[in-house]
Image 1 (tube, each protein chain N blue to C red):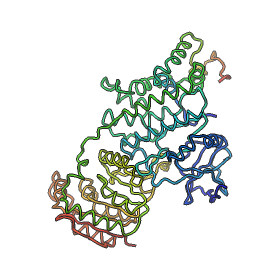
Image 2 (cartoon, chains in turn orange, yellow; image 1 turned 180 degrees about the vertical axis):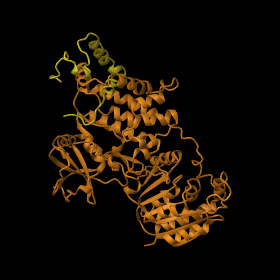
Image 3 (cartoon, chains in turn purple, orange; image 1 turned 60 degrees about the vertical axis):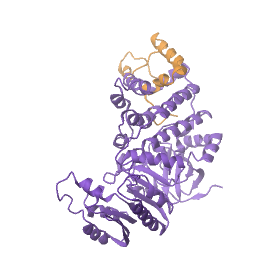
Image 4 (spheres, rainbow over the protein chains, first blue to last red; image 1 turned 180 degrees about the horizontal axis):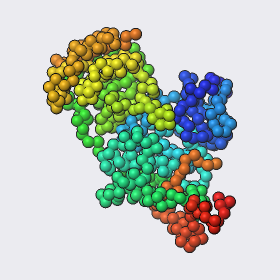
Length: 476
Length: 58
């Protein structure tokens, strides 16, 4: 028998990002993630549940673990009478495509296509194609929107194709073909990049004959303009009459899959990508630093840990020895790209690498500012590592030292912070372009005073002549 | 049942091109029917004209 669920009638448990599909609404509670289905969605679910595909997807973990559930009170959230409820496994930490490096978006795109093609083989399909339906167990993608699966209506073109282009294909093409980061575009528009805008960037003579551009970008944009006033229903009907069928749908997706597979981003060697191997530490200092961090991490097991400014992820890996999940944040896209590829190849499911700047973190976005949550609203850590990052935030970012510590205190987490003195070579480099005496609050004595005001410092140690580590707990 | 996403008319038709050779036959057939006026895409604007054909069948 399906387990009885809690009363989720409370409006506050509704996942605010789930409103777009009128047949399926998501509720989040401490007891789990629940999906309320309309009668039509329930029929789709029944068809999916009965398929071989579903057994396979549950077995290989490509789709979030799901079971039928019952609620004492099903909230009235749909336009029609709710007909059933599913319960989903909770993903460790929610993330969004504008935080992923190139290869995460690419792997999510390939998962989306794979699922849709496998569904076609069993007369099912996916009604949309949104990377917001993909989440991560560390470096392994998992598809979370079971409500996307529906019964196939033979002869119809792919409804999700335009969305696939706007949210997966164009962002990947911009990065691969133009070295243009897609994060700002996806953060700026939750619907993604429209065909016309992609064409504006990719229609030059050097680009239009690159793989996939002519059909998916240039002609797509042209046909969108040309047929803007034509009724979609009529086109569907005529395409079916002209012989469009499931085999063609699959062929179209197969072509797209090859285009996506062919997209590669040569992550340039930025100032940061070689940092792990080539920094201002000698081997002894690095060993002392690792030992200090390991001791702090081992003190208690953390549910969630953050590594702010994770670079090559060496310390995120140490944190992962004593945490359920580590979110590894770095502002440098190429660095996170490298880290993701490594974690993926190792099959790691406990470290989630994200492109994120501390001085410009993901905000609340979308409808009423509640559709996509800011980083902190998705869960604050039990432990936060801030190693070799304070000088970047406070000198390059000009964030006052006290304000950085206020933010750290607001996380309510144990912190491990590294402070490089003004005389540190890296700090000197950051200050070298500024007038003498710039960032006067950047000073070890002032930093320690401000830290003590907000945290109880349990331990500190010099890792090198110019760098000090602190382990600190928030003061009540 | 209607999909909640508008697939976009141009986005549906361009799939015949993305599909490559496999879809070319369908594309030609569709184009031919248009050319010979057996079939003509009706624009939304046509509805407003008094002479426009009835849209009861849509």
